[in-house]
Image 1 (cartoon, rainbow, N blue to C red):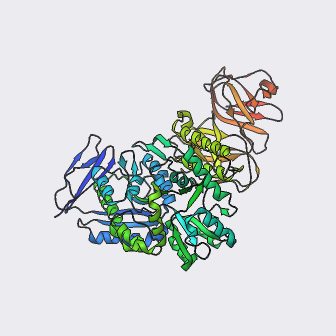
Image 2: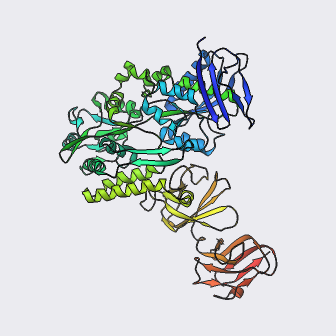
Image 3: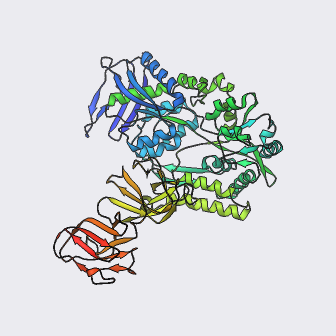
Length: 622
C-alpha cells in the first residue's frame, strides 16, 4: 500500500508523525512524560479510533462541513470516526474565543490569517513538523503558505486563497473601459449621481495602494509569534505617490468609506465598490446581469500611471493541540482532507460560498472561471502581496493612516507629515520597552476616538488584585469601550470580564474613571466605570510597605460623602492621613483637622479606615 507521511508537532514536548497505511504503531515516552509517535509509526488497525470533537466554521459553511466530515468517516482507510459537533462561529470570532479558553475551544476551527500570531502565543495551534509543512507547501499557492507561516514554522492548513480585494461595479453605470481607471470610475459615478465605495479608512485596503507603487511592509515574527523586526517603506517617495492616489478618490466628491454590498442598495447607490470574493454571492443577487468585476483600477500621479495593489490572504483551518497523541494525528488527517482538492472544489461550487481555492490543482478548475469575482481576483493576483503575519498593533496604525489622508488637504507637505507619523508609530511597536508592552489603555467609540486612540491607565496600590484606573473621561450614554494591553488586541477585556469579550457600554452621560481589576494570570478581569471614587479621597502614609509615596484609593459609599478602605493590615506605629486628589492641598489627620497631625496606629491589626468628607473625621476600626 502506498504510504503518505504526515507529521504534526503538538508542542515543544510532543512531536507526532504518521504514515497512513498498514503497520504497527511505535510509541515512546519523553522525559516530560508525554507520548511520542515515532517517524516510522502508522495508525494501528486494531485500535479503535473514534473521537467526539467540536468543529467551528461560519454559518454558511456548516451544512457542507458536516457532509465533508461524514465523507471522511466513510472513506478514510484507517477506520477513523469523528462524532463531530459543528458549531457556527465566524473566522473573526473563532480566534478570540480560542485564546479566551483554549481548553474549551474547538478541536478544528476556521480563522482569518491575521489572527495567527495571537493564536500561536496562546498555544491554540498545533505546530506542523517538516513533513506536514512539506505537504502544505507542495499543495497550496505561495500566498496561502505565507499565511500559515510564522518565523520558520507552519501552524495551519490553508482553506482558501481568496482573502483579497478587487473592483465590483454596476455595468449600467460604469463601463468595462471606465472600470480600468480611477478617473473613469469617478467620472461615471459623477455622471450617474452614484458613489464610489472604497474602504480607505481601513489599513488592510489602504496598504494595497502602497504595494502598487513598490512599497513594502513586512513584519518579522519569531517561532513563538512575537514580532521582532519590521521592514516598512511607506514613508518614502513611492509612499507619497500612493498617498496622492488615495487622496484622489477621497477628495473626488463621490467617495464613501465602505466595502459592504449594501452600498449598491443605499439611498445614493454605489456605481463601484472595492471589496472581496466573500461577497460574490451577494453581488450576483443585487446586481444580476449588471454585475461587473475587474482588477483594481490604475491612477495617474504627476503624469505617470500606477496600478493599485492589494493584499492576498487566506482562510485557515487550525488544529488545537491535544493531550491524546493519536487523536491529534487523526485530527491532522481530517484537516488535510478538509483542505484538500476535492473539499476545496465543493466550497468553490457551493452557491452560498464560492470560496476561491488555495489548492494548486483546484485552482485549475473551470469552475473558477464561472465566478466573476474569482476571475477578477486572479487578474489582481500579479499586483498582490502575500499577507504574512502582521502585528495586531498595526491595524490601528494602518486605519489611522487612511483616515489621516482622507481628512488632509492633500498637499505634499501634509501627506509627508502623515507618512512620517505612520512610520514613527510602526517602529515604536517594535522598539517598545517592557513597560510599554505591559501598559494598559482604554480604547473605544468615545470622545471622537473611534477605536483609534488608547487613553492610558495607571496602576494604583489598592489592596487585593492588581488594579488600574484611567484618567477622567467624559463619556456619553451609548459609548462603548474596552481596555487592552500594549496598544494591541492580543490581550483585551470588555464588560463581561473575558479575554476578547464584549464591549462595555456606557449607560448614562457623565465623567468616569475606568477601573480595571485583573486576576493573577491575566485571564479574567472586572471592568467598571467609577464616577467619583478615584482621585477623590485616598489614604497615604507609612503603611503597607510604602513611605508616604503611594495613595491607597478609598471607595465612596451610597451617601456620596463617606469613603472607606477595607482590610488594611496595619502595624503599631504606622502613621497616615487622608488626602484629596493625590494632593496635599486638602488633607485631614488626627481629630479631623485639616492639615492636622498624622494619625498614629496604636496596635497591630486588620483595619477598616473610614473618612467622613463633611467633617474631616478619620476613623480606624479593627
